[in-house]
Length: 280
Image (cartoon, rainbow, N blue to C red; front, side, top):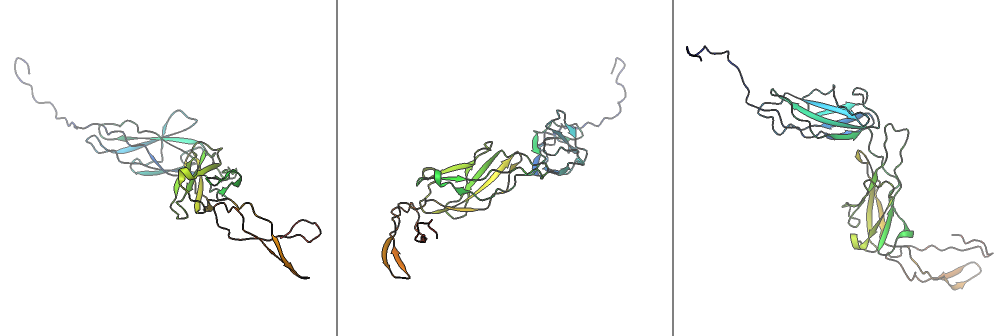
């Protein structure tokens, strides 16, 4: 308008009353191997008033400072599997991922970063855990296991970062975590005490152990059924009962200390009568 009056109308404009989407949740790692990384995504909690048109997934590895878009991701699926060849991933290296959402108004802030190594989870430990009798007593049992082994022939296998030991409630199969050795790869034993775990002398308990690496926890070992007791002690020598030209009868008393478990079996050994080593 001026002193002479109003002008004509301008051309019409279409304006969208909306904002950019909120930042997405960080990607979820569903699985990993020496050749692939499987990721999952969640819809944004608030699209800003305008539907999300696409998502952009970014990646970098531990040796690279700059993120790059993942060209194999279609921008709309809520999961994506990256391949070492197609996506130029580095076997055995840690990779970082983040996500952005875009609508008609613009692009969101980046999500938090997810990280995972292009490597398998640790292999199953063998053998099953066992009792170290030399470090055990009637009030504590030392459980030991073998270290996880890195096998050069397995592509991308990465170092062990620790172990987790699981124990049931007394031969009932209801396992709970007894020891979390995250970031303690050199610890290969754990003392189960009566005060902390309430174990009962003579009762059998089941144990499993699993190795950890950067990506998580590997398969648990085979189950070990271990008795909370020690070997019998203070066993008197056998006593002579009778003999003939072809037989000898002896007897013995039970050990004075059964150390928590009932006696289940005896074995008798002898020499040949000429001061040689005793044989079964």
